[in-house]
Image (cartoon, rainbow, N blue to C red; front, side):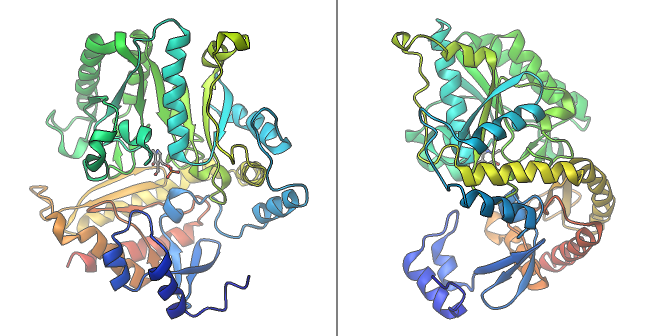
Length: 453
Ligand code: PLP
């Protein structure tokens, strides 16, 4: 089917008539002139009106090497000559096996088995069910609660929202969700525990320990976004906090699930955010960047200890009854293999760490803008919190939609962004060059200056 022969107006009409976009108020959308992407190249996207934009959020935090990367395109073509998909239920396929081996090679030490699915949310569902069932197999069926962090986001399925805690997204569904124990998360910019990150971290660890003292006997796992809470507004943890959580989980005999869906595969300047603190979780979830941003493959990776708890004679009924139609999809696994190879060849993770420093230096100048309240950065994961008053940190009224206004201005200036409330998110493709990053930062600065004027 020839998809490029339609005009923007024709496509928009069909969009309005047939398509319901995610995380989108359709009333605003149908009255607007939304971007309809036709193609991409490198770090840029092109729309149906012929406009070109920088992809300033990596197509929602997942693009690694850019768009139309020859090596990745070729991997999919080569795999297509073999087969597009066959099931992983009760059998296997070549790329799924080879990718699992590669993944275990780069995971935090101690993680040993890969379970595939197709989105971050499904990876989290699997983690929840694995942790829950693990304790049943251990003869501790009472351990079925989850401790989660306030403002956490782990995806949009019912299990994933249950372990989430972002009222704006989750409150409506409260009666559908299973209850969890909420631990406060350190928000350094607005902390009741003062200004010292270490002290703030310690105060929160004490609170978490208190929860564990009260609830460890009925808790299956703690789940956390490592180093940076993403959808909450890019809220970074104090150094040592993740390690502290690991130590508490071990001390009180609860599993630790680390959700690396946003942070994994180089985004933070290490392969995984866990690597910054030498942490091995019991279960790690990842997705997004795994395929370079090409195809929906996600993973839930766990230890032999957990795997072995399910490994038994059939009659013992310890099978993990979970799977999706497209689990282990060959096209996805092939492009993920090509992605990892290209990451190695281009020294991508070390390069992200280097570029992040350069970006950080430039971002510091953004404080000159009088509505920039806080700039939070881990690697190339950046959030800029806009406030009404820089001195008092007074936020804008949410109805003013200042974040959206800034992103709209960025679009006019040639970069696509998507805000989280009044936090402007900047998550460029990891392979963006210094020059490209500088051009994007120029637009970001101007968009904030003009969008908040
Ligand atoms: N977990 C985290 C930490 C995320 O940031 C996201 C998405 O942004 C998800 C899970 C959900 O991933 P997906 O959108 O692929 O379901």
